[in-house]
Length: 457
Image 1 (cartoon, one colour):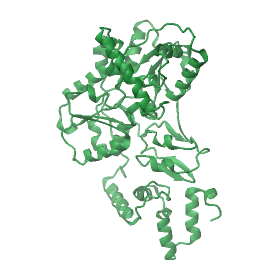
Image 2 (cartoon, helix red, strand yellow; image 1 turned 90 degrees about the vertical axis):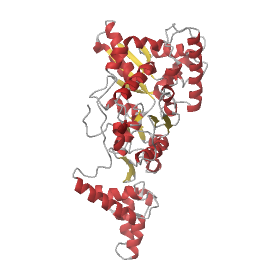
Image 3 (cartoon, helix red, strand yellow; image 1 turned 30 degrees about the vertical axis):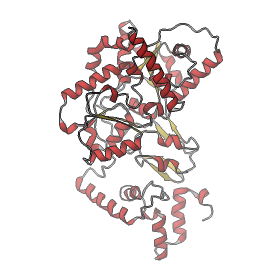
């Protein structure tokens, strides 16, 4: 089990590019951004790597840390693990076999679609539910989206036991392909597994996995970057290029659609369940669930991004167009199955016992951002001070103090040693009472927003 006290974060800020515009400050769903010395900083204990800040940054100062593509050359058997939505990024006139061929020509020895593990992933969740009938952990919550897992860890710790500690299709597929190649006589040290990620949260989850000490995956590649490499290669080769015929996976329709909204819920028809996408929508629902105003639910499929993975921050195309392509591919799969052509993802079921034996991880632990102090008495005293100070602040959440809300500023004052006079309303009040000069107030603003922005105030 991972006992690190800090999360690994895939998101970071380049101070050379940051202009302190505060777009990220007001977008972050967990209030993990502050403006200090005219630059954005990310509070590690609050960030869930959802990537909302990355999406709104106008100068690309917020970036995603990723592995070097050339690392694939370190292995004689490099495997690219792709989610089905990667194929959904390409125009309709580019065949799946053409994409597979391009990936091989870029240096990968094997191509594997991770959603092949969907049926066994679903069975593992069902078995977990049967083995854990306790009412106090209902509804069970999917661990598929790592941003949601972290959101619950830091903001809804009372619900952390509801998260199903089951490895997702990515990890199950990685274990499967490594076992298959090893059985074929490949030296395990020569097998390199590289996942093509649509989001920052999956990078963080691989680098710092929950419920286990180390991920089986060797590297993570940015989907946007790899898409551009593949698409450029295909365009350079032209329509008449004769690429070598390759065996491509024929996933079932359920596997193809598993990463879209309702992808898990539709496979749990016997459960009363909800599928909710968009991190703000998820937060609104979890608020109600934690308050006890929602009852009688067996299972929750929660995804951070709109339209789930099709709307992830590293997806290249419009999420609705991607979804349409995936539904078209799923319809073809249904037609094949009616003709008796068995989907290739059924091949993994030959390793059913092995996959199910490694599916469950250690229980996921909370890492609440609301832990104010290890000593409960001190923590309660701090909480009382935060609430009292917050009530005295203007509640306009203007962000001029460098925090996203008045409550966040009150918390920073009590816990981080910030000054309450960073609030411009407090400054004006103190100036009127003669407790602070205009020059002192202006100096406080300069320390937050910088001399250049405030000129010669």
